[in-house]
Image (tube, rainbow, N blue to C red; front, side, top):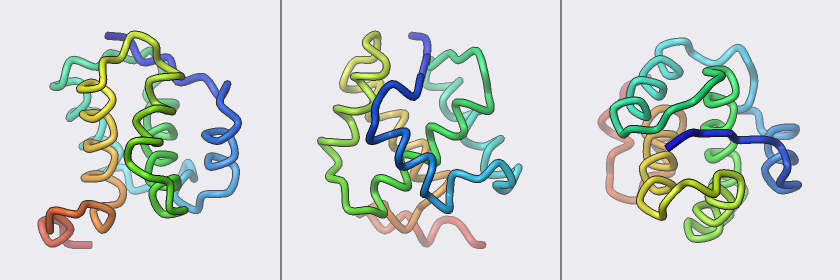
Length: 113
């Protein structure tokens, strides 16, 4: 499965533009953990920087109140090769790496800042 993540979606592009989490100066450790997690999940990508920004955009969408089904729909629309499971793995990796407070399972306590 290859991750394209073009900014074709207005919603995702808007999140990238306004989200404080979408800055290139994100914690390198978070970005490295995210990239390792999606690689292990079998998600291939050509540009690590774009993959990181897309992961951060997932957090921006969640912070803005976008529902999980809507986030998964956006991920799949931008990446037609993704299954629902693949989109969910990408979104979960993003949340665990960049916005653990968005996880509803108490995982935010797993990561100290």
